[in-house]
Length: 521
Image 1 (cartoon, one colour):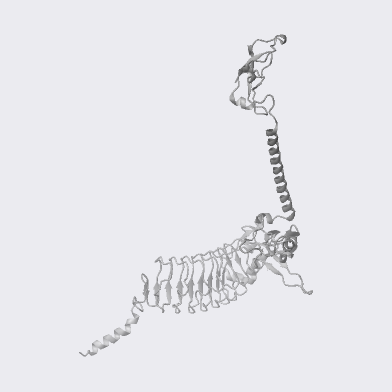
Image 2 (cartoon, helix red, strand yellow):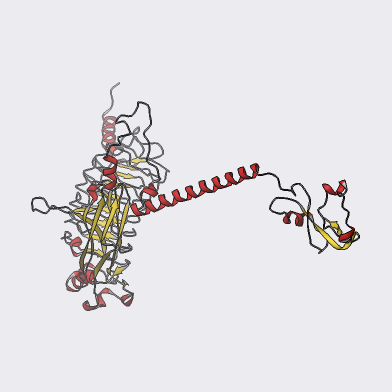
């Protein structure tokens, strides 16, 4: 059945208008579940997603993934979306960005990462975003911006970093942002910023630095002068209120109102005590470097290599490199610790502690000597011990704990001598006790052995507890007598019987010959 001309015309018109109808996805079967797809836009916001949902059409140009729980961008999850122009990932739980996470999005113009939990940015996190114009990083937990973080964003025009915890902006952190027009660093923890950090921003038009705890010292002198000379054009009326937080004498004052003579620094001074130390092989050692100045100096330890053939070698900075060597500096306490573990002969030599702030630098040397006697004694063979150990025997571990080995040689010797003296004293006491017991067993029993001794106390009856306290050296029980109650009359010496006493008294009481008394017990 042939179609009429009017019907054919309407059919052709419908086919032409079909792509222009709103609300129809480009591919009915290419939209992730629970998402909404229309034209070149996919909306997947507030769906409690934990990952980027699969099945997003490859031709998508705008992708909304905000207000979800995405904590990690899986490797390759954005790889099919090469046509993306706008990506909104704000208000998720992203903690880190892998290097090359957006490598497959060369056409991306806008990237929103506001309100996540990013603590740091890796140098290659934005590799591939050669067309990116706007980057939102506000409301994260960023503390430091390291050198060359944004090097791969040559066309970036807006960088939003407000409401973070940034306290350190390295000199080359903004390198490569020659097209940047707006930089927002407000509401962070910046105490200072260097002139070198802003030099790459040749196209800057808006700069926001308010609500930071600025430290108004000599390091910030350039900023006040720069704003007065020509930087005012970059600041709005609100942004001009750069308020000092320290020193206390300048607190709450505007940087633009503080005279240049008041922005001062105190050069650092350094002290290492003792300046020289001798350590034993295998010990652990830590040496403190105390530094003072304003602002608080940054402390760094370095080992000075010994010259070879009259040519000095390059210094090695000890900031956590090789095992056994460690060092760190801190801006907070002004003290740096040199940590050396399991000391060997290679640790011996000269070290330097350097403290630096905006007012200058100061260095102080430290010499470490290593006592090699312990190593030599271990290398000398013992003639009484065979050179080879029988198979299956476990190696004999060195006596003493790690804490004991960490003590000095003199301390170890004193402790060992004290322990030996105590052991010898204990042995002598044990020998004396045994000897006395043997003598007692060999000695004949005394004449009064086995008899009942009586103590001449007349203070009344006694208790069993008191009787226990009245035992003599031989362990005989002693009782108390009462002189007020005689049992037998007094016998005169001349009337004393010459014959032997009665049988009851031979093994009974040893009483005075003249008087007997009542016994209380």
